Length: 602
Image (tube, rainbow, N blue to C red):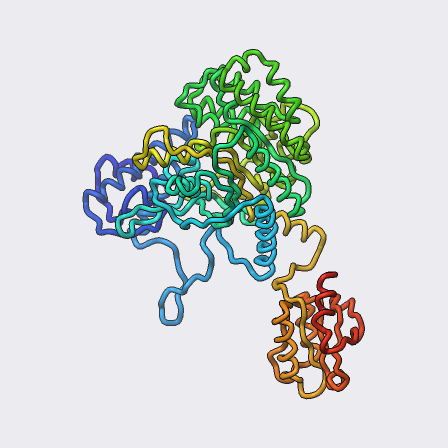
């Protein structure tokens, strides 16, 4: 840490310090590569540190926000520390070389067999529902050209992982699966003027992780989208029906789907008098109402984003409203000032059509019309939605809106969250996972302009190439964290790590290896998932312990006596406390059919 006064003196004298400067400001969050220092660049870095130190001191003294400047100051000091031979201390091995740190990068994790199997079951459940609704699947590269992703995510654009230049193309890891899908459609318009597609793949965000809550930097998304020109709200209603079917099938407990319409929200901003150049930033502030009280959101609008206080208050009259769809819709339609705004009135009419269709599908009761829902991504143009679970809110706070959905219109306001401890200079924000919730477990909306935007940007005719789209994305990691928490609450043993259905056990004799191999091959050929011990003469208890550890439901017991009689014994495994005796004798040539019957009953 460099003291305050010497830095000010250094600023005045411009005395050079030796340092290694990062390649560019844009690469500050990427790997820092040292380059040769110069006297001028050394003085430049020292000047930046000195100026920021003074500025942070002044901001603290005047009690103004200083966190952004303090973070930047910490980064500059770390760069200087590395240049002076500092940096992270590493353990040395016997030869004096640095020891390798065996860990996964921040925000990522390995998944063992049981976790991977549970996640596979989530994928399978979602995929079966997507296929039931007539979808096909595609795949896109895990990284895109940087220009493809730029400017599509509003304030969240800072979370995109940029890659270093590797051969003339600037690329970034994909942030979601929606923008790559729109790019795919823009490139293949004549082949796919309309398509129902699902895509399951990893995406990457440089967010602050909360690992136990499913908030990670590398995670899976499961997307379902309908692209094409169709009548108002017909595909939108099916998307929401799919969402309800999916979350119900995953058996995560009660949930609520928050709904809003960007046209209504834009109409409210127009009525309140929000300048056009501030609409998206104010929309992003409104979207925080489920986590922060109105006072904090209003302060962000007025102090941080320069909105007039009276305009913010007019916005507040509407965005705190939430409740059953048709009831809140009737309340808004009776507001003559709001319906006089053409954009808002159009959105209200579309929501009325949607609620009728959702009622036909039998899913309207899962919905909550929530005027605070804004979705910060810039590409949404119509209906928007998020699914929330009881665990979405931080511990001790109620999920907004309530789960299950409330049966009356309310003007809700989130409670004030606990204040985080101040971080030290240069320290990266860390999240106290005991104080955060899972967040939304699925989200999506309508984006009618994104494909046409790509088409025009690539030289296509202005106004051409438009393919309207609507879709939903399910956050697998967050669903998995909920299912894991439910498993722990029930004090259930860890889930299975493999799908083995039958274990072939040897009793007595010389281990009967060849007989076991012949039997297990017969089971494999019949499509039965089977295993056996690789030891020539395995111990009986070790074989049963393996079955218990892997939670294999059935064993086929082979012994000299059974072989003489042309039999095997089939036993259902119920753990160490639930053994089922010696098992049921079954003729050797009938064992496959018998096992299939038993497996069907599991």
